[in-house]
Image (cartoon, rainbow, N blue to C red; front, side, top):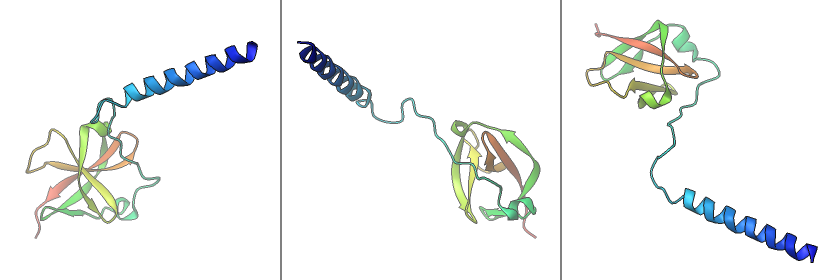
Length: 116
């Protein structure tokens, strides 16, 4: 009798888990999920050497500073030499700053300089 009750309880547990798991996946879209971008282990050497990013016909030079931003506050606009390039979601063209990510919630910003 004890084994029957244990098997019945285990079956009920699997049924409830399957039912609840199914309900959780019914919701489509990105509800409850936050955008996440991977931070490099170390910044690219060309960034640390002060070389610019070429984007939108301009050269953008890295600042010796960063901004603390959540991944959900930026979106990727490009990739340059293997590095993701971002802007703030609230930014409009012409952008004042572009960013690269170098650590969790840390984005180096770049200022545009007119080409000579």
